[in-house]
Each structure stands twice: as C-alpha cells, then as structure tokens.
Image (cartoon, rainbow, N blue to C red):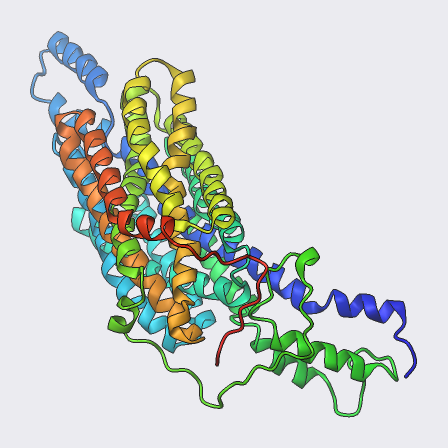
Length: 524
C-alpha cells in the first residue's frame, strides 16, 4: 500500500474530535457562567433595597421642625430611602427569607433534577431550564419597573427560579464527564469550574452598573443573557462523543472517501474506528505518555443500553455520602459569602453598593485560584479528600482573621478576600466537579455512565441544603452582630473537616497508587 501523504497524517492526528472536545469545554463553561451570573444580582441590590436612612431622616426631621409639620416625615423617608417591604427594622430577616426561598427550592429540586436529567436529552433539558431561568430573573427586575412591593411576589419568583436552575449543574457536569476521562480530571475540572467565580464576577459588575440608578436592569440584563445562552445550547451542545458517530455516518456517502483523497479512506476509517473505541478512556492522557498500542485492545460492548441508576443505588457508591455531607457545610460557607459579602462590606467598610460589589469580586478571584490549585494538588497526590481537608483546616482561622482585619482598612481587606476565597471555594469546587465525576464513574458501576447525573445531583443537592441554611442563618445572626455570623462559618468549616476524616484516613493508609498514565478501559 502506498504511504500516507504527510497532509493526510496531519489531518488524522488532529481530527475533529479534538475540536469538538474543546467546543464542549468552552460551551459548558459559558453556559454555567450564565447561571451564576443570573444568581449574583440579589446580593448586590440588598444594600439598595434597604439603605442607611439616618442622614435623610435627620434632614427631614430638621426640615419638619422648622416648618412645624411633624406628621409628614416618617412614611416619606421610608419611600425615599428603601424599597418596601424591606424598609423596616426586620429587613435582614426578609432578605434572608428571599435567599432561603431560592436555595431551599434549589436543594429540593436538585435531587429530582439528576434523576430526570438521566431520562431526557440533556441538550433539551438544559435549554428549557435556561430559558425559564431567564424569564424568572427578568420578572424579578420587572418588580422595579412596575413598582411592585409585595414580598410574596419576590419570594414566589425566587422559588420558581430556584427550581428551574437545578437543570444546570447535573447537565453540564454530565457533558464534561462524558467528554473527558480521569487522567488529569482535577486540573481540567479546576480550570473548568472557574465558571462559578467568573459568573459571580460578571454578575457583580453587571448588577453594580445599574444598582444605584435602576436596579431592575440588574436582573433584566442577566436574565436576557442566560436565555440567550439557552438558545446557543440548543443549537451547539453535543452531549456525548458517541453522538458524533451518527453525524459522521450521515455525512459520509457510501463509496466515497471521507477525506476526499482516493486510496487513503481505509486508513482514515481505521484510525477513526480505533479513536472511537479508546475515546472514553484516553482523552486526558498526556501526549508524551501515550505509548499503549490501540490495535490489540478489544472493547466488548453489550447491545442493550445501560439502565439509569436508582437513588439508593447511587448512595451505595463508596464516598458519596461522606462527600455529600462535607459539601453541605462547605457550600454553607461559600453561599453565605455569595449572598451576604457585599452587604457586609457595605457596613464594615462604609462603601456604597457598587463599590462593595466590585470589592467582593476579589473573593471570587481567590476562588478561581483555589479551585485550580485544589485540582492540581489532588491530581498530583491522588488524594481528593486529603486535599479538601487541608484547605478546610486552613480556612477556619483565616475566616476569623478576615473578621478582624476587615476593620483595619482597604489593603488588608483585599488580601484577606483573596485568601479566604481560595480556601473556602477550593474544597467546594473540587467536590462538585472532579470528585463528583470520579464517583459518577466509579468502578463499582461497571461502566454505566448514566449514573453520573444522579451522583452529581445527590452531592450538589445535599450541598444546596447547606447553601440554603447559610444565608438564612446569616440573616438571623447578623442582627446580633457580624461576629456571630463568622463564628457560624468557622463551625461549619470544622464540621466539614470532621466528615472527611474517615476518607482521609483511608487515603493515607492506602498502599496502592494509581498512576495517571495507566489506561483503564470501561466495561460495557
């Protein structure tokens, strides 16, 4: 047979699967960025819903005394300063109730979302969820446009939005898990999971731009963005590498070369066949370490499609319960910062809403770095639980330091925001991504990739219970001083650490190590 021309070899080595993998990485990154972008505005506008009206009250009282019209100021001040019904002394409890309504609905819906997501096309499921989330986010902003002051209106929208937003996480994690293997999952997932912090940063900047002039647009613009990304998802998301096989078959007429070069179609077909057989297991192997010949490998696949795993079956996977409970407390801390940090900075540093929102983005910048470091370290050591435990151990005293240093000026506050963001979000990011993907493809499942969505939903759903409790407790405790909030956060970090000790002990006493470069074939 004639030698294959260099140009053909180049096309074969850089086949289109690589580009589809890159597309999936970037697209799912942008999709979930829009989810967090639409969640962030509520934390930015809190200081606008209830302003510090003391100065206005004093001026109004002075004016009323001079004009002897003492009966006018009270109601007028509330209308000028704050947005009803958040203009009373119990405003922190009301704001906490709005957070709780969203997060509680999110936690309940998450358990169902993973089970539903395994039984429906992910692309359609995710598209519908994003369009619905865009609608409800815009409706919240329209409350400002139409001058709506009903607490029930805002709470009901938060509940509905919390439910539809559960379509996001199990779907994108399943897609990224389908396309990327275990080799460098911690690093890849660490980079990919920065979408959470990027979304928070963009959401803060967008909401902060309009918060003082028209806070309704702080919701409407993110709502339009997530709905637009839902349309993009519908047209471009590819759920699984196997979906490309049907596309190749449809686009390749019988008897014609796939590359349009006579005499070399068989080489290309053989290459593509070998690539598809080893696709699920060699995606992340470093180029310089791939030395396993593909030809002798035989993968036997059953004709029947694997059935979706049950809820109780997913709970029996080793490590699912431990990491789920740990995430409950880790996410409690992270989401308390997500929803209350801008208001805390406003009060502690005496900044306006926009300045506080911009400053709070440093916490998310630290979270990006922390998530990536956690992934890299856990890949290097092969110990996910130990990596999380060390970061949790360091986070508790750092939180105490932040509560003290934030009173000493802007410079120390910036430094502590970066450090706290890394230590708080590092374990949270690692558990919700690499750990969830590892457990969703655990060897006990015998290659049943359909379990990934359910496992992800269980872990993140349990974590979302903590995410619902954290902001609620912060709203209740902050009335007695912010110190109580930080004590609560430190306690939660300590409990998260305790729940990982069994897995840490197992990792440290493990005598077997799994080299990254070993190819582990899935059994189908």
